[in-house]
Length: 83
Image (cartoon, rainbow, N blue to C red):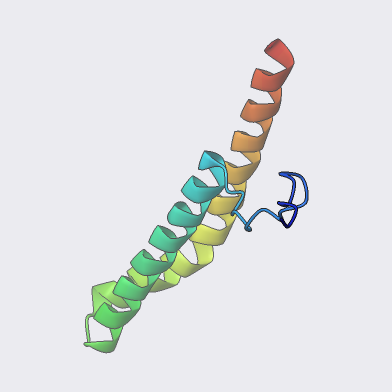
């Protein structure tokens, strides 16, 4: 009778390694992009107020996003040191 492969010989299938923080960051970036797209579509429809909102949103959101990411990183580092 043939030898059955050992448990260590059988390769494990690939499993994604996403953490909750990574998934939340991806969702946040997607929501920011969707909001920018909304203001852009409103601008294309001819809304003058939407043009100003789109310009301010596209100029301010990258900086605000980086500030929030850096604050979250500092928060997680401090929480990790307290444990």
